[in-house]
Image 1 (cartoon, rainbow, N blue to C red):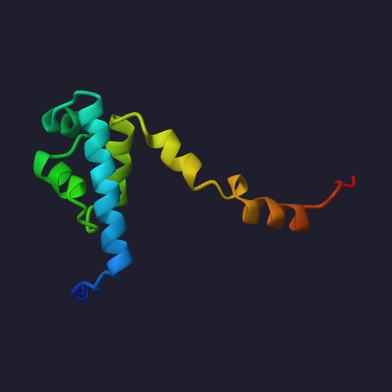
Image 2: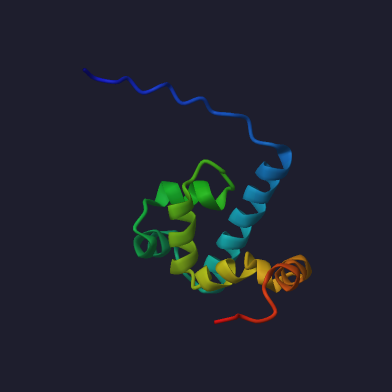
Length: 107
C-alpha cells in the first residue's frame, strides 16, 4: 500500500518576513561584494547553484535554512549569525537564566 503525500500548501508570508528576507539577502550580497567574490565563487563554496544564490540574495524566503547557513559559512559569517541568536546575549535571556538556574548544585 502506497501512501500519497498531501499537496504542500504554501502559506502567504507576512510583510515583515518578506522585508527581513530582502534585508538578509541584501546583507549577504554586500558581504560577497566586500570580499570581492563572484556569485559563482560563493555558489561553489556553498555547494549550491548560482540561481539558488541569486534567489537568496534577492530575499526569497523559500530558500532552505541549509542553503542560508551554507552561504553564510562561505562568506565567513556563520559564527556571527549563530551568536546573534544566542539568548544569553540578551537582557531577557540573562534575566531568565538568573531566575531559573539554581544558585548552587547539591551533591
